[in-house]
Image 1: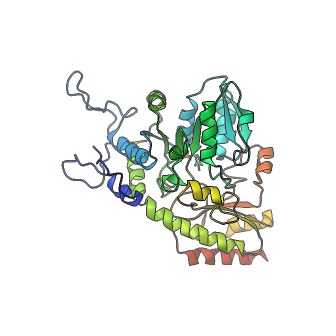
Image 2: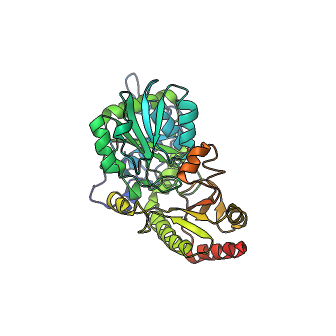
Image 3: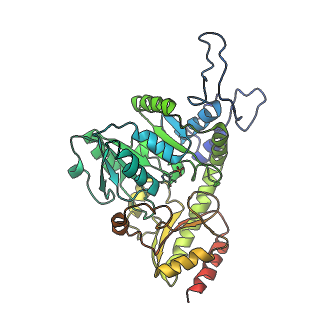
Length: 387
Ligand SMILES: *Cc1c(COP(=O)(O)O)cnc(C)c1O
């Protein structure tokens, strides 16, 4: 189906070539949307390889092979959302299992662990994986370690190779949510992770127009188990949404390069502004995770968090942005500003918020691909309202 791609091609070129069906009899350059729930058999035992879309669909499979390739995995599974991807991975575990999770995670993942998985008997220990060694937290029933790096929204960076050494020694599954950097900038499987998760809604889709999620693996046994859960639970991505994400991936490299350039420039700009008390961007040399990022990633991404001197001013910024949208989510071509305390992290326990420094003065930016001068002018205008 999809074209065999030479591994010598750069990521930029691969993104153009992968989305192709050489067998398409009309020579379509865009992979077709197979909007079919079921597939006919050519007689008994004559399946085309596609039986029923909950299990397999050609458009979705094309997307899955693209994402698997970008993450250097043997298989990728496409889900109806990032949360569906996380929830399906959690079905690998049973009551009594223990999982070590990082303390700074996407709010929806924390809610899933606390409200759904804990009720089903899975035990969690929250650890700051960017600073602490996991060895002391491993118990007889520990099965996995789950994290994001850099984290949302505080941009803590964990050394993945070092952590992978520890999980491998202890026989634990290392699960990395790679949404913030996308496979364009970081490949956790190459650094020793066993499972990579993505919210495809973000950089992979790239246009704030669809919801999707991925799980990528490099081990056949794990893949088999996840495929079984996949067809049984039924949270597969629809053919049309699969096509939208295929289309998004074609411009992954140019979008991310430009967004990163803007993020770096905005980080420098915000550092010099009165009323800004802290700028957290791993691309800044003073960021504590800067050197680790240089070692394990190909870039620093387009997410940055900053803190202002009062909650009042933070709210005034949110009330007065015009070019920038005040919205949750990230990874699209437009710049979004998010207020973690009332949006993405609204249901995170207050002690955890406090410990992580997520206060009512913290704002998060998903930097888009607009003209950088327009973005700076927007902030100049909004900052003038502080006085
Ligand atoms: C958005 C997000 C998710 C959840 O993905 P959805 O597509 O919204 O379900 C998980 N992890 C991270 C880091 C995210 O940003």
